[in-house]
Structures are given as C-alpha cells and as structure tokens.
Length: 79
Image 1 (cartoon, rainbow, N blue to C red):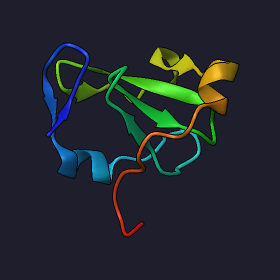
Image 2 (image 1 turned 180 degrees about the vertical axis):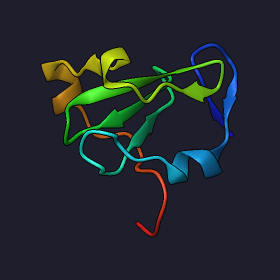
Image 3 (image 1 turned 30 degrees about the horizontal axis):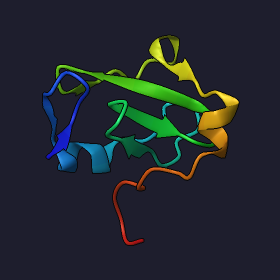
C-alpha cells in the first residue's frame, strides 16, 4: 500500500480507480509529498488520513520545479 504524508496507507486499488476531476485524466502518486498529481491540470490533490481529497479547491498548484521534475509513477493500467 502507498504511504500518505501522515503515515497512513492508501489502497492501491482505490488509486487505480481515481481520475482527475478536472481533466478526467490519469493521476500519479507522489509518496514523498503524499499527493495525487495531475500533470495535465498542473495540480496536486492531498491525501489526508489515507483519503484522497479530490476537490479542486483543496488542490495545490504545481510549481515550475514540480512540473519540470521527473514524473512520479503513473497509477493503474498497463504501462
């Protein structure tokens, strides 16, 4: 299971089912920050107590450094 920032676990099967609510595109898990990344929308959704908060109002806008960094592993489906 993936770790959240607070040490809680996130169910990998749940992560595979999630999509960005804005773009409907794939999300990538960033275990270092405990966030789900939508590279298309350039935002990161927080995961609190193992629960993804999929509200655009709660999402963090990715910085230039975040956008230029190598992407975290993509979730779900064949690679």
